[in-house]
Image (cartoon, rainbow, N blue to C red):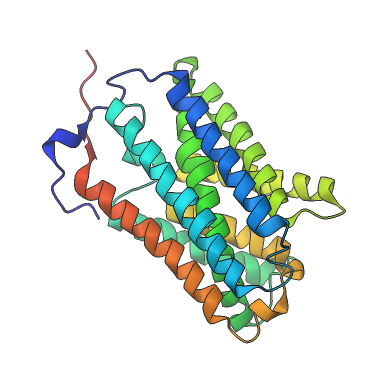
Length: 277
């Protein structure tokens, strides 16, 4: 992903120009609102994950998982690339070698946690675990891309002059709230307060992980692991037993879309660091 030669016209100098609040805050929040509405209409009102509906799952994957969850953020991120407000490192698109290392280490850690902690929902049969993981991917890839790849990086760019502490705190709080609202729209039930609190906690863990590691794929694994563990009892078994080809296909489609976006950025953009004057 890092071997092709970027177009010289698209070489980015970090912080080369200041972006406006509209670009860094308002537009990302509008995208968030559209995504929240899609989550609620396509999955929340239909109880998509509690009651198996393969056709709606495909529709949700295409619209909320790929179109609004990946393509729209990419269009917005491309604009801020050109302004120099964010770069490849900040949004979590790294070299292939570093990505493989981060993903491998994260996956092994999650497996160890699953095997030795005895967390509720962490020990289903292997095929069920695989099915559940893929089923959650349309949700988690979009969540990571919007909450941290888009909003988190843009909020941090907006408050960058206030220092790293303010930047991290603002990024964690804002993105965790958005994550909690989005997931509550998907799985809202009678115990909504409990859901929001749990999702906010997962959002904080995921935000801290992303800002520390800066890898989209590794963060997707962390979020998917957390949600699979927390929500396994709420998922319709029809998605899991037998292994659902629709669920596997939907999960694979969003991951391939994410890889395609990464390839596009790596091929057409690079970031150069200039010595401070």
